[in-house]
Image: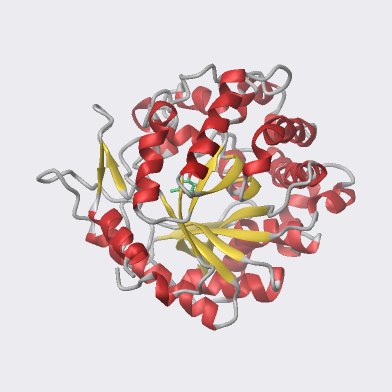
Length: 441
Ligand code: FCB
């Protein structure tokens, strides 16, 4: 790495992020069925129909995994908690093994001097709630609030920070409009409802945690930098609409109590009645804002119904996800967030990283491309700080190679290689480089 800790403010946190379904092994410990299990079991949705039944077996190996976090000199670990592990039916009787697991995991972080940064929901909706309409059903805000209360009564006293929901765009648009994540719908009315209810549930969870006396609560939003494919008005409009749907809808709702007009043009007819009345809940004050950043998209107009746009291939080098590497978008987003939405609120890059094939060669993985990716993005974080954005931390996605949703186990994002046959962990060159950057005096 080209940086060390000294290049960042003293209170800047370095962390890694993971999520429950992607690493734990959902078949273990009495967890309930989730809509991801159903989605993955349906032919054509997921590469080789792979699922998170065993994943990295982090459920049994979490101590070894947290040793790796500690040994790298990382300050914080962003993990998520599975709703279906805690409440197998989504509501009702908790699973004691699930609560015990998150309790042990929390203590194991604290014993190692690692700050626990929880995300309550990273996409594993309990199937019985999906049966009731899932994110389309307004009642999800109450169900999610109840889950929040059950879990945070147990571990909330020891959290460094908590965010309710990972990446509302993925929960709503990717899953209900594009059909590429569970529940795999392609339906504009379902989308509009999910786009709204996901924020209502976020706000309800914040209210619940404030009621429990908790602090350092935030939100985690994914953003892509939207670039017009050419200089025409139509292309600029398409790019602005993509930006509205992907980025501005969610932070607009949470920080301004308003949705962008350009998106309402298409979604308003499909929103639930009296949606405006929910903004007092949606805009519950937050203590920080998290940004997950990976790439940009080049957007062009397209025939067909609203939103009448399409992604076109850009010219930049790409990762194994086929995502263009565009580090500048990170500083652009951080600066815009601070200037237009969050002001002085601390900002965190809560996910950032890249996938590569990463074969083991001679017992190691020489992932120089990932080292460069992290370096280039951390340089943009510093640029944003210099421009006045109050960025307080950066989390690499991810600690371990893991279950990359519809793309199965092939897309490796880890600083640590996982052999999915033997489950052996092997730190990659990027892990060692990051550890040197963080521990060099
Ligand atoms: C983010 C998700 C995370 C992982 C990375 C690559 O959108 O939060 O679970 O899939 O992308």
